[in-house]
Length: 338
Image (cartoon, rainbow, N blue to C red; front, side, top):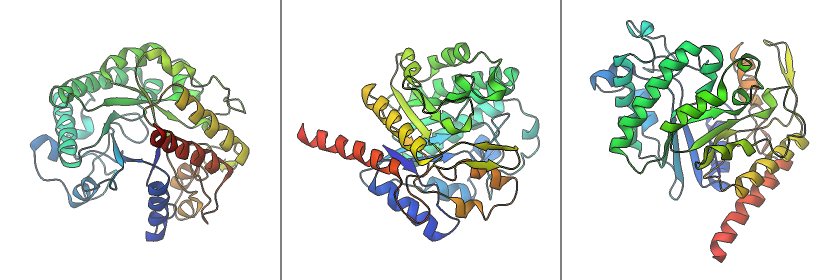
């Protein structure tokens, strides 16, 4: 059970609050490289920028596991990841702005980058695709390119790192076709086919992002995960404890303390029953202070997750936190007893 270090605010204090909570109430930390890939440097084996190197210097606290996620897709899950240079999410330099996802150059650069990240950071678990099936909802032709990239990357990694769990993550709302642009996509077939190149079935899960998810979330909502006959984990998850108005999308996402508490209970109860490998709740702490410092439309995007923390921005525990803490304590008490 664990969290990311997503900050409560764009300040040293906001970073410290998230880190402190994650270390006290989790035994795994999730780190996401989703702001691009240093494509030319990775292809040619050249040194990475200071920004990339500093990110790769991250180490989990003693006694904590490290779950590293890397994505070859951009933040919209529509095309090749942007360029990671002195900062993240820079425009792709030429000729990378025209490379298909399955080009020989992309494959070689991506495999090289992932191998360097493994050698430097020594993660305990590795995702080489993040919410990959969202691309299937948006562009089936590029999905076929991506599937080839994933297959070749997975195969190359497993030759070298046979015992490291390697997988892609599946966005559940798209898989269940509860997202608007996923309606006509062949999610079950395509995700099932790609699972031949994944050690585990790993989910991304934010039920409040779709108005089609019933409240309370149905007790059998996650039962489908066992059909793959593989170990199961949750790479990221969350439920908003407040309604969220998204001005750019002219919609309001539902949320309440009761919704968050019920979802947390359902998720952890299912995880215990089906022996999930790990569960990550993305945010430790509500981040409306961070959102207030962002410009449109980034503020609207960040607002989606602003109230998914286990504590408020002023560090008051929410009802869902008691559920999380109960399962976390029970896990260690059981281990101690045995």
